[in-house]
Image 1 (cartoon, one colour):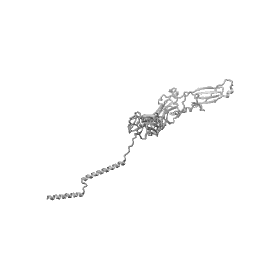
Image 2 (cartoon, helix red, strand yellow):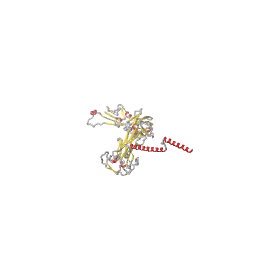
Image 3 (tube, rainbow, N blue to C red):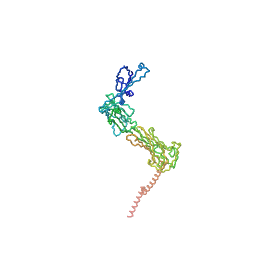
Image 4 (cartoon, rainbow, N blue to C red):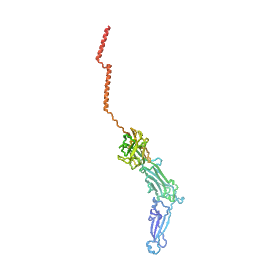
Length: 529
């Protein structure tokens, strides 16, 4: 007879067979037996499949009974010899028999094994309310895990399931092995017994410690994760079969949660080209134009404002928004600064909504004509202050969104304007027009955020014809002549005064006068005698 035996026949493939033959370590065998007319008995040795129970993938499948299936039939040669083709065909005979696998449990637990698994953890970073700030060297985050079985029964297929949003670097421990899992955020650890071929069997009173090590560098690659969340649970994979139970499951779980912030230093600069614009004042009630080179728009004169935002690192900014503001119209609705060109570079990370705001009238960029025929009424007496702000005029905005603003990189917002000259009705106007760029990164978990507002200013002045300067040489000659004449007159006056005072009387005249006075004195003396 050909006798075919199949062990654990209710389970399909060989790796999941729980019982195998001792001599072949296989679950199937076909044996040729010569049997007599009397009852014959044959003995085959079987054992538990150590490879299966030792595998981290095993669950026991205790809800499925281990079944032995035996089928027997004559050999083909024997059939051809002793059996007539005219007789009823012989069919293969099949018999089955089920075994039971029983686990040893404490006497007072009845049919179910009861165990109390417990997990204790320590974290390398305290799970406090203060955030974890990541800078140039994010480092490693470690979780020290200890699992224990408080009994009273053993725990079969003991495992720890960990789910987290960090990249696992490694798991270290002599009493565990790691099971591959299809989900990248899941780590499955199986207890590895040292005294049993059933590797997941954790005897009561046993403990096991291991370390989970995560790298924080993965967070800084995109700087988007705002909270670290790692959760884990220790359990027996037999619990689902109702053969085992853990009634105290509150001590089976652990959780780590912490807010994350990223360091990034943001700076800004701005420029206006040119910094000052002079225009010839034009007062017209209305104007008609079709290109940007029109006299009303200052012909070839234009204004360019550049705003540059710097990310000096050490981390990128995952999300940011920028609001560009410029003085678009007077309060009466007259155009003021006409935005005809707007760019945010690099375009790969910067997207802006410029609909109906850039070159809104569709004017041709050069001297060519376009399909636009614009006529504007400039009948206004608006007066602009020396520094024009959005409280004085109507401003407009363009919003841009920036994604993955890398460290040590820049984002440049460039805008080009034309000045609507007839709107500047004030004679001898001198005013400063500014555009602003407000960079906000509140959507990103950046540490110590500060306001980033860039301002570019252009002075717009009415052109005044220059006054020719005086001829300096003629002015000097007149001054010299006047000084000479004045000096001569002054000298004559002084001379007359001095002459009148006797400063110019000669010495001879004085001696003559003195002699005459002396002679007269002598004569008077003689007459008196």
